[in-house]
Image (cartoon, rainbow, N blue to C red; front, side, top):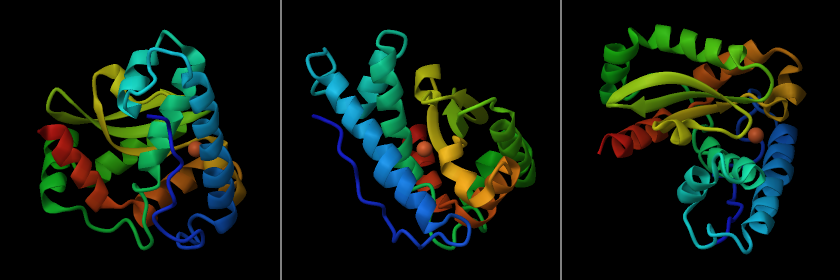
Length: 199
Ligand SMILES: [Fe+2]
């Protein structure tokens, strides 16, 4: 199996004004496409050919840095498009909210810490909600890394590479993270991943 660039699950202008058509055109059509194409070239002839994206990510970590970078970013972006939706944000599904309150204190505290993780990630990377040892926790990772390589399962990730926000927010990464949580997150998809991670 090789990597395939998926279509966006919504129109390019569907996330405006929080994420512009221009950002999505570059981010999806150029950046994600490049991870897919470079990843496929790097996969050729390796032991990872025919493996699932998750297996390539976990297997190449610490062994084949170039392949890992592209496979990790492919995995992250596959979900990133679904972690957002038009008219996103709003109330969390009940079961997910209960678990977040239990593990992280409150929904407001989770948002505050998630934003802090994204702001505190020096340079490019991701802010996460991930399930580890049965608990939801906040994480941050550099570059293409994700919770899978730290024994955790990601349920929400926000891309804090500049390609994700610089056109719309310039250097205001905190504003981008806030808009992501308040206006873009598809909590139903987060809950779906939470359910899958809890099985
Ligand atoms: Fe990205």
